[in-house]
Image 1 (cartoon, rainbow, N blue to C red):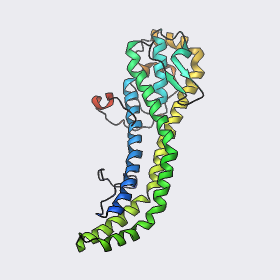
Image 2 (cartoon, rainbow, N blue to C red):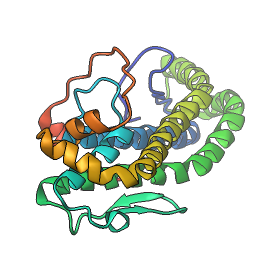
Image 3 (cartoon, one colour):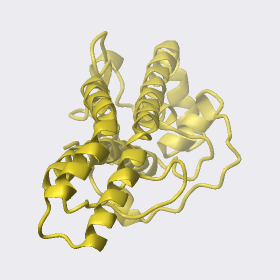
Image 4 (cartoon, helix red, strand yellow):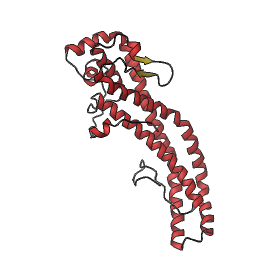
Length: 263
């Protein structure tokens, strides 16, 4: 049903065909839910990868969207284009809480500004999907235990399946029901992904608010030290980045430069 094979407790749910129409219809709906969850998570990850790449943070151990967003503001300030902080950094009490205005920014920062806004928007679009997707998952989880009995009824009426196909149909049904029992974990991982992203965004807002009055000083430091990227400006003037000691995953430039869209 449209997904690759994988193994392990955190592997993707990939339900099998049973050749039983009503049963496969149910499993198809469950698989569709799973694919939506995985797709949204992948979009957030891709948007963050692009943001980190455009701001030169992609090789900085422990760096995330918080550092990249603040780094963009520091870099724009260093270029002398931040006379009006509130015009460039739009912080509100409503979702998505922060956005960066690209219209008056230096051309070299436009790509990173757009990447930041794309990331922020993708995260909050995902947040709005948590509750409806959780409701659908709950319905599927509650219905799943009834499916093996339904499959047996379907098998008894199936005239176009031989004995081996009937055995396989029932086996696949039971395997799928077992897989559906993992839906709470999939949902937890999805929500955890989104909430961590929101925390990073909120942390960037907190840091920018705390350093708003220091932007002239930050600008001079970056200029005097000839710091030319959001990352180098941030490493000099931003909060310390907590290292993970993990080696950054390699990403192709082509993949990272691809614009992400929420679907």
